Length: 297
Image 1 (cartoon, one colour):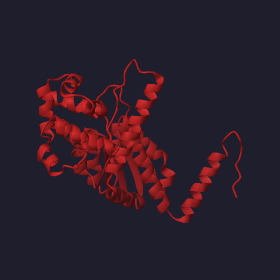
Image 2: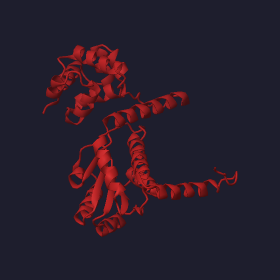
Image 3: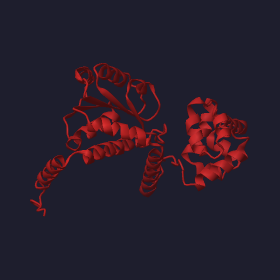
Image 4: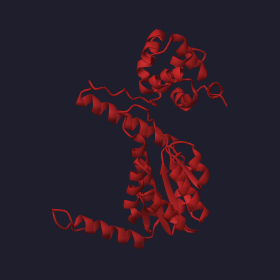
């Protein structure tokens, strides 16, 4: 379905969300306008057509074509819908980082963009999929976490929280070790695969191998992708990452939050005996701090 059809059928839908969804299918020149809108919608909202074209480094007709491509009759309708989206507080803003930014400006931009993107991810999370993943993890005999690059860091963080999961957990960093581990998984095991793009060949192969062996596969991805074709549960963690070289990796932060949700939910489902063992473990860690043992009532 064309994005102009989606927009016309859902006139109340957040226009910023429509722009973001339409981005991959737009012409190269139209993508310039879309990226500028997503980077600083407040600036575009207050810009005349000529200024919006200059800010996007395109012609005025290109701005009009962009508006039509996302389902608006023209620039004025687009601005009205943009104003509505901003008034609802569902902004997707991130002023472009500049070498001339002061430290205070960098703090404001990066914190602001991070919080906005996390709020976006939260509002788009499928709680039913999360519930299905929690059920699988709660009943797992063992759990293996997989990821490469930034997603590999998320996998290691998940493995580090293994006491909450209450079963043996692993996270291999080497691609050969990942395939070897996946090939040994079987019924009762759960593989959790982190891949923001969902297009990484090695992760798709791991999902196939683990699933073929009988393990359940959970994918945590930033978009609908080939990886999801080989999993039992898909958790989509949409963020507002853009292609600016200085943009912080919001997708990793959002995935780490999802890990906290999963491990906390599984830990809460464990029995009282597990809770007692977990508290004893936490006490041992507290006793290692320089202030000495901490007594609890």
